Amino acid sequence: MELGSTPPWWLTTRTCDLPSASATGFLEWAAFLFLSTCSQRLMLSAASAAFLVVVFCLAVHKVISRRREAARGHDLVNGNGADKPLLERGQPPRRVVRVGAGFVVALAASAILAGFYGVLLVLSLVARGGGDQQVIEAVFLALQFAAHLAAAALVAHEKRFRAAAHPLTLRLFWLASSALTALVAGAAVARLASGAAALSDDALAIAALVLSLPLPVLAISGATGITTAVAPSAEEEEADGKEKNVTPYAGASWLSRASWAWMNPLIQRGYRATLDLSDVPTLAPAHRPERMHELFVSHWPSSWARRDNNPVRHALFRCFWPLFLANASLALLRLTVMYVGPTLIQSFVSFTSSAERRPLWEGMRLVLALLAAKAMEAFCSHQYNFHCQKLGMQIRGALITALYRKGLRLSCSARQKHGLGMIVNYMAVDAQQLSDMMLQIHYLWLMPLQVPTQYLLPSFLPRLISFHVHGWVVVLGSYRACFGSF
Image 1: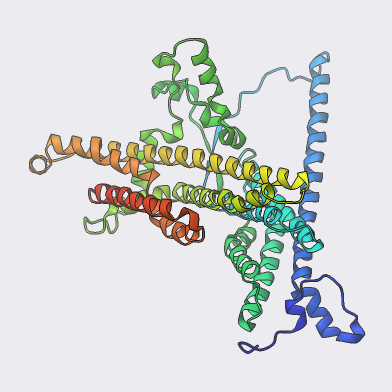
Image 2 (image 1 turned 180 degrees about the horizontal axis):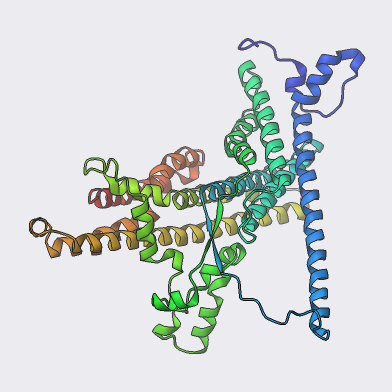
């Protein structure tokens, strides 16, 4: 197709009316079924709806099976005990679950796609009318949002059951969704090449394809990235001097971590009486400095480690890049929903200043959209701050432990170059600065994204200038203080 040539009708049509095969021909009729916007959205909606129905049926079947097992166990408890063994078997060894990069990428990709379609759904309900095409688009976006949210829930649920492979249903959905998204993006590129593109819809279709790139790889590999290992026994833990009062965050579910419900026991205890030092729980075993030091040493690039290559930076990146990527996803999602409120201002003004009486449901829709956007913004902000501080704590623990152990092995000539005051300064100042920078480092790449977006809102131009001047001063100062030391 030449640039600027007239595109075929089936590539630019927005209607869902099927043409007659006698009037158009079989090839054009088939092209309409696979390359028109309405047909592509219908196929994507069908794949998402089928996935949601299968997941719902499996969930109902699992709930029924659990109830039957609970009833059967109740009958055994109330029986005479004839089926019980004479000798009790020993307890199996406790196993701990560890997640790898595959699990983090699968969860992040599904969650980002769910947030992407959720934001588009809110904007579609707010910024457009109530015609048939708008209703079809809202249903399409709602199905995509629900399907990818269900996929993210399934991936998060795999950690509880220590699944080594993704379910076949999820893998088929990822393959179908990515293939159909590629088909939609291909049609969008063809419309862009012919000069008949709808810039907003076609650009979003290409963005959806970029976000869906990890899905076919995950579907083909099938591995979840979840591994299990035998946890140390109680005697070993007591011999190692580990405390029993461990933070509930270590065993909390993803829903408890998202809603901060794991903090309720400590808050209730502090409400009843003054907290002592013994009441404050210790860190989770996976977050303690000794574990962070083991992780740091295992990723140390010993084969090419030289001072010029900055091995500390490379080792930290290899240790904590999944957490860094998750924090970046939260920052990007917060930036996306941050601008929903300013875009709704004109809609609120039009609704309140309209001369004719407008339906009440339009005002309720605006209020609910603003409430949902602000709730999502608050959720992303709190989770981003918490996980950035947690990542900084882990980096600080790894560096302080490594510096302390390195200081114990220094020779006499090395101690003359690195005195006790310099080592303490490394541990107390430089490590803390790098830990504090985790809250600000993402603004280095978020600032260029905020500038073109906020320039579209003229009323926010004065605040934009002051905000970015202050932000760049803070970010560049932190960059010089932290990276200059390492």
